[in-house]
Each structure stands twice: as C-alpha cells, then as structure tokens.
Length: 619
Image (cartoon, rainbow, N blue to C red; front, side, top):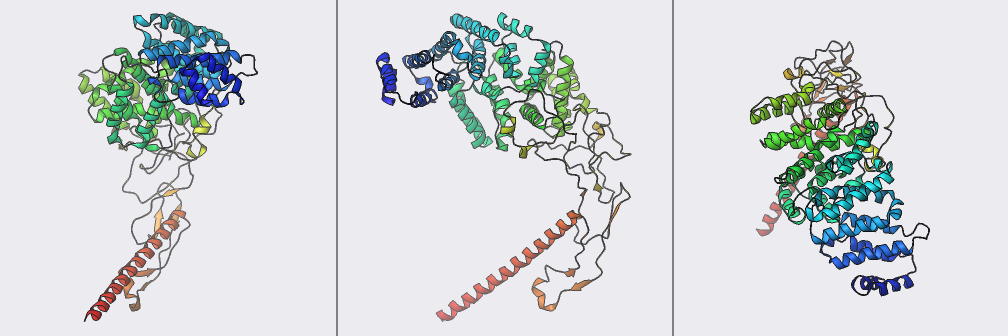
C-alpha cells in the first residue's frame, strides 16, 4: 500500500488510485495511517506544490467516492485537521498560500461533509478567521475575500455551534473588526451571550490549531527540558525557523497557546512561561498592529476572570492564565525594563472599555483577579507600590499613578477584611480560604477534570473576591500561641495596608493544597529544655506540660555518649500531636548522632589495628 501511495503522489494519479481501491481490504485504514504521517511530517513546508496538490486530490476523491457509505471514512477528518495545522500563520510563501487556497476550496465544495464533524468545523473557522489578517496585501485580495465569505457562510449556518469555542471567539472577532462581515457578526451577538462566552474557557484544540506540530514540539521542549540560561539560544533557533517573516501576527497566537492551552505537571515549566513570552514580545518589531494583538492576547484572560465562580478548578485555571502577565510586569519593573510593563498596564486599563456595556463588570473582574493573585502570593502589595513608584518616575507624569490606583488602589488602601476570610496569628502562614461548597458553572470545560486531577486541587476561593486580604500584625512580646483558624479573633485591630508589614517575597508558583485543616497550629520552642507552661493568650484555654522531676547523670561506663547526652531526661509528652512529633524527631536525631559517632570511632580503631599489623609484618 505504501508503494501505491507513493506512486499516486509522484506518477500517474488516476492509475495508482484505482489500484489502491482494488487492493484495499481494511477500509483504507493502513493508507490513512500513512497519509497522516506524510501530513504531520515536521518538514511539510519543504513539500513541492505538486505533492500538496495531489494530497488534496487524494483526500477529495476518498470523500467523494465514499459519500454514500455509512459515516464515510471518519479518519479523513483527522487528516484534514492536520492539514489545517500545517498552514503556518504569518508565512506568505508560495507553498503556504497554495496550501491555504487548496484547503479552502476543498471545504467550500465539501461543506456538507465538513458539517458532520463539529471539532473540524471549529478548527476550520478559527484557522481561516486568524489567517485573514495575514492576507492583507493587495496580491492576496482574492484569497482574503474567499476566506471572509467562507467564514461568514459557515458561521451563519451553524450559529450556536461556534459559541462552544469559548472566549477567544470574541477576541478573534474583535481583532477582525475592520472587516464589515465580522463587525456585523459581533454586533448581532446578544449581550448575555457575550457575557457567557467571556466566562467560558477556549477549547484547547482551537488554540493549538494555530501552531504546527514542529512548533508545538519545540516550544514544549524549550519550556520543559532546558534551564533559563539556555532559553535565549533555543529561542534564536525558533525565531529563525518560524518567525522570519513579517508581519508577525503569529506571535499573538503563540502567546494564547502558552497562556491558555499549555499545561504541564512540570512546575518549573509553568513558572517560566513568562520568560518565553518576554522573548516573543521583543521580536514583534515596529508593527503596531501586531503589538496590539499580542498585548491583548496577554491580558485577555484578566478581563474575563470569573469572580463569582465557586468551582476551584475554574479558579485554578484562571490563575494559570493571569500568572504569566503578572510575572512579566513585576519582573520587568524589578529589572528596570519599564517600557513593556507600562504598555501592559495601560493596555489592561484601556481594555476595560472595549466592550460597551460591560465596563463595570470587567473592572470588577480585573480587581477580583488581582485580589486572588495577592492571596496566592503571585504578586504582593509591595510589588504594586514598586510598580507605581518606578513607572511614575519613568513616565514623568501622574497618569500612570491614576491607572495603577484605578486597577489596584483597593489593595493598597483596603478596608478591614471580611469575616469570611480566616485570621492567621502567624504572618508566615499562607492564606487559606474557606467557603461552603457550591455547584459548578453552567458551561464548564469538558477536559478540566482530566487535566487537573483532584489531588492537585487548589483552595476554594471566597464568594466575594473583591474583598481584601486579611492583615497580619506580628507580635514579638507574646508567648507562643495556639491559633484558631476557624475565624477572625475578636478585638483585632486591622490597620492600613501602607503601614502594615507584609511578606514581600513572591511565591514561585500557584500553591496546591487540600481542604483547610482545623487542627490548631502551635509554635514549638527551639530550646532543649521543656517549658512547664505554654499559655494561649487569646483564649482562656491553657496547655499544661509537667516538668520532669529528676535528671539522672550519665554513668562512667557510658563515657562515649557523654558528649551527646548531658543527662537523661524523663520524657514528658503532652496531648498535643505537634509536641509528640517534635519529641520523636529529637529522639531520632540523637540516636543517629550517637550511632554515627560510635561507628566513626570503630573505623579509626580498625584502621589503626591494620597499620600495626602491616608494620609488624614488615619488621
């Protein structure tokens, strides 16, 4: 079969195609497998125009000849999906334009066959709607017109199906707002549908469809298999192979894939996504349109943050999507690369007004996302103050100060926190949010539970995410406390955030934890002597630990242990599990120290005996 396929692609097509039909005995399964390998080959861009034309001719003949069969050849949908992924964004070479034109004409002729597969229908619309901006040159005017008419045609025929794509459907229509057909479509969508779409996560296969298989593999390898010091060298190779053409609209699609589609169990790779995005932003050049598309792709999930959702999976996904943008802003400010940070903050602020009628809703989404990011130490209040100070000096005016105040002023000048957020007596402990369980949102993504198992669940978020964080007032003149995590302590004096001592170290990643524990947390003394009484100053409850009555001196026969055991203490264990654990650790450490010391002395004695033995033999 492989020889017949080779002959069909290089020699007389019709003759070899007839031979394939005569000799087929497995419903073209083996030939489809070979065809997938050809289409997904990483050097697909090196195929000749004749080879691409014959591949499309073979697919069309298979679809036409088996139209009456039940279900046809279902594997051909996967082949067509692979062909769509091989259309490289931003590439205006002759081979890439031919591939785009051939696939478009095939779907125009076989639109009925296309409608039978919803996944391929979504990818087809998403691909050609993204390619419209790449074909803006006059020489591609005919192809651009075909793409616009085709996208409008399939959208009108399957209006409700395309809403399953998610929030990037609105972004895609906004990016092509200059096209009258797309402008009419986005204006015709009701406001309640837009609000629902903005809360719905984009389908992963739509975001991945804009990257070729080779692109996807190289970016994943760069993030997961290399250190930060090697990123620049690997990215230079990636830029030479995939970003060598202008204009670079593809960068916005890559950013969307990195933010909203790429997920990995490698925590280091997830934390370093912003470094790759920083390299991408520096490669756009002076094309202002590509710059605006890239910045919108970066802050878009911030605008769509669902502040009212009680599903921890959705909240975790929202944090994954806004984390790279926050890290990019904070790290650029710390490294004094203020231009990118200033542009991103201004884009975030100006994007609040791009959806008429949703200004207040989006502003609250941005504030809620910032509040949750503060709660998980993705950024801190000190970071916000540093951003405000440095950018105001860089800009030379107070406009950026007003923007930062509008976005994050509620965090820098927060009122007393709500009682729904727990009070922690120890300021070094992470914030644990406690809310009652709630139902899922109406339109969840179907792959959330598969890609994020329950063992990696995040703490649930509070119902009102706009509420500020609890403030911690460390006290150094009190005995160790047994803190109660069930709620705030009465009589606690909360002060202004500007005058508060807050942790300034930003957490490297989004924390994972199970349900909050209700076990009291006690601070354990570092002294070897057990204290007689540990008081709880915030409550009337006392934990009484009896002190040992006697201490037995070390016998002379145990001189080897005298350096480790000053005296034998009577073990005094309280009912607190933390004290028991600390006691067991001390006993285990003492045992290991004694064993290691005795073993070392025995080794030296053995070596000395061997030396004496060899010296006696030599004499």
